[in-house]
Length: 359
Image 1 (tube, rainbow, N blue to C red):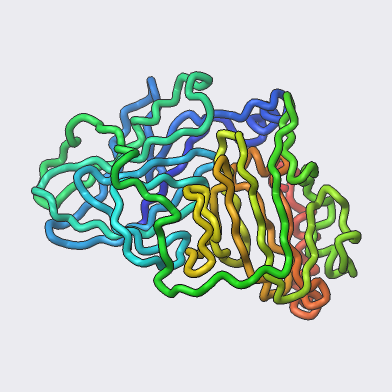
Image 2 (image 1 turned 180 degrees about the vertical axis):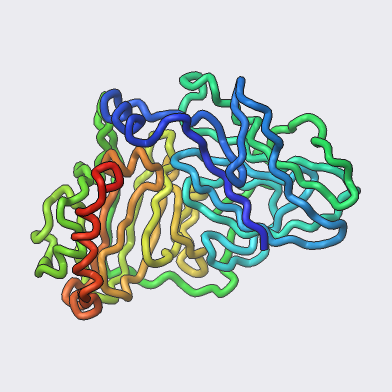
């Protein structure tokens, strides 16, 4: 298996960019994209494109990872099909496509057969994420790598061709699990309406902005917090009995951002994908990062292990502005599982001893 990481590159650090976002409400725009850490931008050095080496006739498993802060990448291999076999690490029935749209935090495993004439081909990963007009460095079409067959000359392929979005395009709703099981019947229902405050960098889930607590959630649990009322409203912490089946509905939204919501610690059943109006409780795919957006999304997950699990938008700026929550099954059970040790107690003094710039 080979890893292909697509990401975004920022010429400034996150701290001043976040401050700019907080001051203006305008989300920052990346300077370029990257593939396996390499990227070009307008006016920058023409660094060599990354190379993916293949041998004629062989089949390759690629795990494509969107590690970006915000950007949505549309990936394809010129003249080659991709057979999707996993979403976010969960096996799916093989599904042949030409093009895949990937939100921040999503991963797909694909099989590609090197069945074309020996030569050089593009792996394309153009992206969107904010208005490129606000950052003249950005040129999404430069985000490419070279698929080089053994025996091909060391040169770039021909002209860039934009991915075709209306033919062979992956629809999440078309994926089926390799090991199907019906979605469990929910015991609890939540509806997450995502709203931004006009003119300010504040996002709300059902009218509440998530603000990280000064005392971490797990530490509060260890100190005796057991109910929803034990936590500050802005912690967006939802307490459930162990074994609860939670359904989360993201109502249809006029917002252009398909917020990629990610659940720590477990996968969920995608009962209704943002790519379809169909509700599938018979054999939905399972994954851990899903788009909420204009068409609406419904997921279900089983809280079968104790502990606090963060559930948040994977767009860094949106998470920092309030799109976060905590699913907390069985707080009392958490105290039985987590047993602070001397090493645990030593973490705080070690952290406090660090210089301020490292904390």
